[in-house]
Image (cartoon, rainbow, N blue to C red; front, side, top):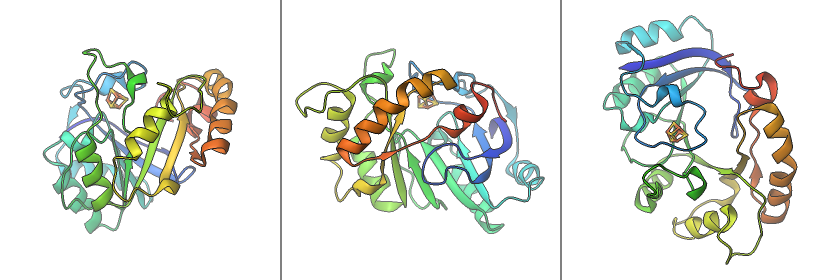
Length: 227
Ligand code: SF4
């Protein structure tokens, strides 16, 4: 597998925020989100070639039960099933971070952390990255959280074309979606940006009932990589 990086830190986002975790960042992502903070992991060849055995040996350096497989986009990696199986064999709690663009069945995954990309990702080709069928499969088959990136000041009108309206329209198409697992996260690559947008997103959460999603890694370490 081509690995962009492996490092030990705290989970910065989602319901496991603050949990010490080993991150395995796989190289390669077919999307090109405008505000992506891991552009160095876009290229599927941008990393080191690791066997699964070498990945397991590397993560054992840290006495940590929580493993996060991230990217890039890990769900497009053909060896993901074997990697998760071997991680489960050694008792790890496995989070997979995905944009929700591909469904893979029967993965050993304790938490599917899905971050569907809204129009604010402004993909270069102008297409939508939302795949309702895939999101239905992921939420029906895995324990999950749904994290949405919020970019700008919002109107709460369901008719407006803002991020929140887009989220509500999408959620209406996901069967049996658990709204308590929906999180709103400020788009922020720096601490200043995070602090500037947090109050607006917090207010959106108060009004919509969705959960505020922190970006602890940005708050603690600003835009430094892999701390
Ligand atoms: S899906 Fe994630 S890794 Fe891929 S471009 Fe978007 S933000 Fe970056």
